Length: 91
Image (cartoon, rainbow, N blue to C red; front, side, top):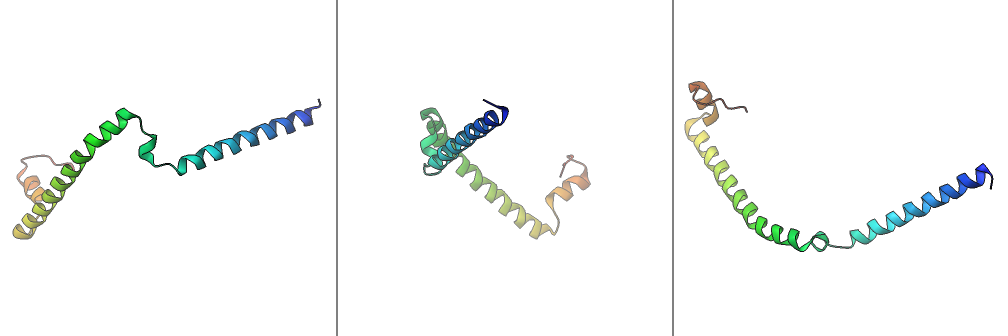
């Protein structure tokens, strides 16, 4: 077998591997992500989702409260704290 035939055979082999990879990815695309998780991952997800929801709600409440304080005082609470040098706020 000459060099050109070996290179051609190698190229065909690579094409076949790429096609197999594409087929595998297309099959995955038709599957819900939750179905790809292990039972342990599904358990962890079911425990973390309520915690994430709760933290989002707390964050929104804090954000709303901060906006109200800023409206009331006319200045940012962070700026007041910075000016008083009580705490070094990095943002």
